[in-house]
Length: 278
Image 1: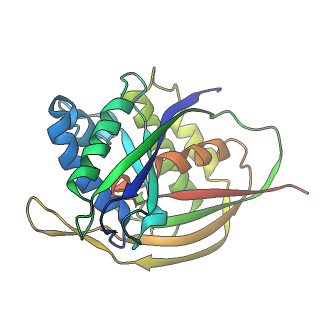
Image 2 (image 1 turned 180 degrees about the horizontal axis):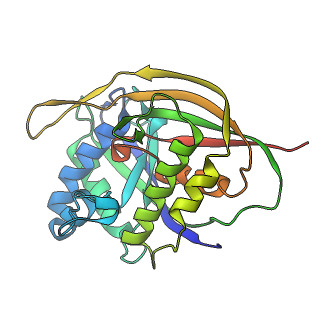
Image 3 (image 1 turned 135 degrees about the vertical axis):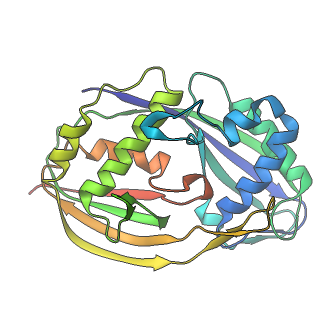
C-alpha cells in the first residue's frame, strides 16, 4: 500500500501588545480563544471546524467527528510574554478538500485583537506561513532496529472497554491507524483501503522493550458550563522492537495528528525516534 496522508501546516507568528500569559496547557487556552473568534468571524464554518457532528453514526461508530485540526503549542505551556515579545504556534489542518487557511488566519488575528490567556493580553498577528505536507504511509527500505515513541503531552489510549495502562504497541498502533484513517475518510481526497484486522494482527508481533511513563493530572474548565473536565493522561517514552517497517510511517504521521483522546486540547502529541538495525 502506497497511501499518502496530506495536511496543511500553518505557522502563526504573533507579537504581544500587552501581557500574554498562558496556562499550564497552552493549547487549551488557544483552543478556547480561537473558538470564540471563529464563531464570530466565520459563523458558517464554525460547526464544521470546531464542533463537527455526524448525521447518525460516523466512521468507526463515532457520533462526534474528530475536528479537522490540532494546535501545536507545547512550547508555550505556562509561558508569559510582555508587550513587544514575539511568540508563535502551529495549526495542522486536515481538511484538504476545502481551503481553511484564510478562515484560520482571520480567526487567529481576531483572537489576538480580543486578548489571549489569563491576562487577556492582546497580540498582533505578524504572519501565517503555510506549508503543504504529504506523508507516505508506505514502508521504508531501511531496516529498523528500535523505534522509540515519546509521549510529549498527556495521552489517553482506549483499549477494549477502558483506558490502556501501558503503551503496548498493538494498542498504540491501533489508535494511530484508526485516527489517521478516520481523518482521511472525512477530510481527505478518498478513504484508504486498509486491511484493519491484518494490520492489527501483524502489530501484535512488535514488542515493547522499555517503558518510562508517568501519569499527569490536569483539568480544563468549560467556559460554557463552568464545569471542570479531566484532560490528563500519561507522558514519557516507550521503545519497541520487531517487524516495524510497516508501522513506522503511520507513527510518523501521528506526530502531526496526535493520537488518543482530546487531541484538540493538546493531548496525545508524540515524537518518533528510530535506531537502524546493526
